[in-house]
Length: 525
Image 1 (spheres, rainbow, N blue to C red):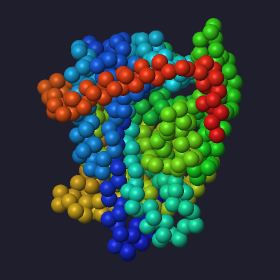
Image 2: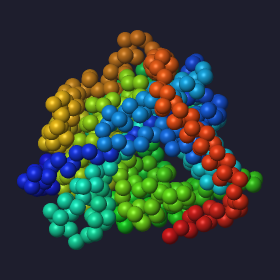
Image 3: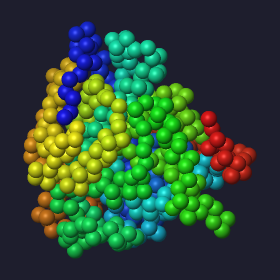
């Protein structure tokens, strides 16, 4: 089962250096679908008053013109991160006119793929590339799947910890290599136990029937909750199931997480390997691009993973090349549903818990993953996404079956020491309190967000779409009654203008022919 022994942590404590795990940087990326007050997906362009989605550092779009993405800088104190996220929400709401942000991960108010406008990024080569990539996703997976929203939790380990860990392990690697190797250990451990995020925090157990308008054949696998809603009775996060981000098209993709070179090599191979089904789509049809290429992946971002090792890429630099050149800088945890019971989609306790879980994954032993491990991890994630609250549900570990609740309790117990250390200078003990809350939830599935959501829908007699609209309207009323402070507003007004000017500057520069631009982009070594 989960390895609770942590030689790394024991040695840090023995040397009185355990405080070095404190103060890692936390940033959040939060997606939300813009909808009308009637609950229908917005057809309007990304509001110009918010700036350019191509060049704004904190307000952009994801797949759709209607799928807004709010990004915070990273802060050591999660309170600052969440405060910044709240201020961005307040600012955005000043510019939404009669629209609101949908507070659920699974979309409502869509009428098939054609009702979802693909994000536009202008006429520059990089802007065209982003738009065509999204066209490719449409042809490969459908637009509806791409309208799903979530939260990405970005975390970087405190820099002062790396040389100490390297020294205590007598590693022959240089510091950059050691750092990257350790981040990959964190990633592998999270893939083994990351299902716990879906169980504890999953908030997408039900789906509006309109979600299947372009894929009606998928409806048969669900039960009917009411006339407008489908669900699995014990689901936690259908967003992370095989009708959400876990695409069957990528089921046979084998990305190697055992080292940075292996990861870059396997991901690069997928981007360079033709795929017959995508070749049938065509690349250029009637003078218009349908996709960037016909390979297994168009670019790195197409690979859907619950956690990614990341490095900040320079302009037009491939993400794999950024990793290869400068190593891993942080991890992006991607499996978090929007918390519809919270106006910004995440609360402080949840963020404290995630930080402690990621550090636990870093500090525990992390053996290489085999092909069988990869398959087991995927099966566990899908089981929890679809049926996580089912009484007696068992998961796989080391070729054995283990009750989910037993494993969850063991994982949570293994976090206790990390939480105690993170709490050391705080009398309120926020990390330990967050852990206690999750221990209570693990022992009582009815306390999970997914169970609470279904119970609320049942008690009020509301289908998912109605329930989501009412909650979203409550959040909108909360934000419309609170403006950000003047300094923040002035800063974001300036950022909006600067981003529009930057996009115009990009578009006014001489451009390579787009074919040549793409060729150069993919030829980067």
